[in-house]
Length: 214
Image 1 (cartoon, rainbow, N blue to C red):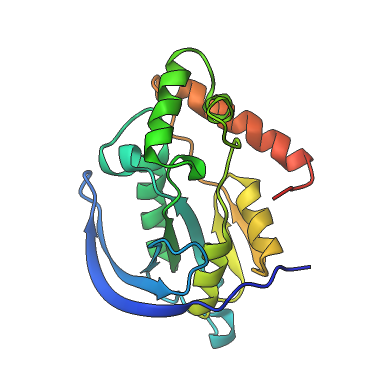
Image 2: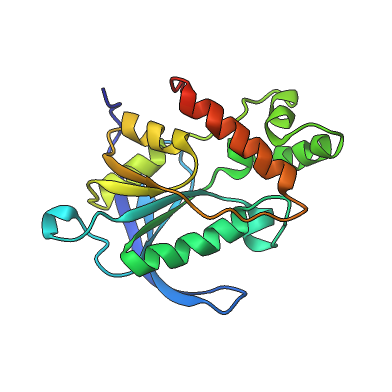
């Protein structure tokens, strides 16, 4: 049974040219919203052609719910794979049509300062999830209610989710979003993020075998 959410509306739409450090460039239609349940300034980037609805004869849009990572997305930190995943997602969505939902959920929802505190604990030997718990947080505090609201405001029906994380698909399904497919992202391994990626893979495998608890 899906969870009911307040109705959000589109506040502003503006065209923004995008360019990445490797030279890849495209254009996005950027959307802001009113009425999102957490009051934060989340963004939706419409990319490519045919990012409308199946009812209008288009393909199922590819959607990437991407959680903000200042260190990785902006400064190119190699402690995580967020920056490369963002870059990959923009190009793949632009090629087939869909949306990148840029969600203000730094550090799996614990915030930027706490994420950097967690980095210090990781340097002392904890993995990325253990560090969050040691700081008094859940392993992952992200909530995709706003993503469901944004998709509804955009008039999007069924979607394909671009993610390796089964919890994103599970949450969106509980929130009333029809997910036809989970499309895996690439693996962006480096010496600096090997332990981080191993922890993510281990947790994703556990999550796939357990009932989702919000």
